[in-house]
Image (cartoon, rainbow, N blue to C red; front, side, top):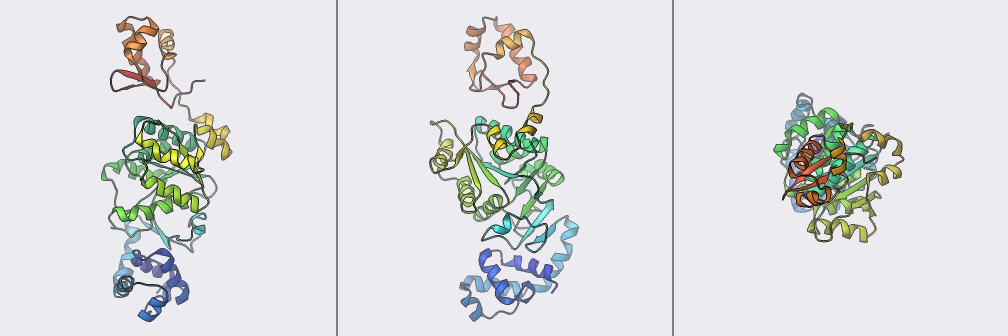
Length: 364
């Protein structure tokens, strides 16, 4: 069997650990020679009875697998093996690196920083704005944003990154399946402006057991990982743990001491993660400061009354009644000013009649 096709056949062994599969390939003398190994040999390599069964079932599927391989390109999917030049350089350093990656779109480029942004699925409005601001600034400065396309922090950061540059999603299932389905618009945009990546074979459904495997690839292809909002027991903390083991920089955004969503990030900071309080800090770390100025989109100027009201609005929500007291404007005048400022993108209305500044407006 041709070498690349043989690597594709080896992806049938995905429920065996990548380290064991790589050892099988090495001891057999290459991917084309992995067929026909005896149970005795497999036991010597540490294969369990279940793993031996998976191996023999895969051997019986040789012709089927060859036919599948020929159809990959028809689905717009590329298979990149660990021997291909395109395979991510940083991922090659990881001990349990996958033997191959399935890709729709492209893989991240090697000549610019790759930053993962991950966090809570059920994120707060604060977490959402942090993710959008950080991703937008980093992307505009030339960094490539990587995440998992999950609800919450993942998709917020990727949508913002795509406004300014590129982004890449690593999926738990096959690259031919958009998960979650509601993110189909983001999925299609990622393929056009970046890429969708997985080590799992096409048609593989995303199931919880696959997400930790996915997380090691997210951190493995990146120079650094940023965690934004994570509970104590969170998949994002698994990504941070992988990043630490892989020698990647780990940043954590602090949050409220009263929020469960802050517990994971605060724990990371106590254990040595870099406290990230603004996008400029990581821009400086990766020498991208000069490009950061490009990120602020032009806004319509504020009127004199709007400027007066704006100075009483901060990052934390302030109630309408407080603004009435501080500004001294009649309710009708204040409401009109707030409405116009929201249309212009300077503020956002929160629950309970509160307003706060948006993160994507320069205060300079």
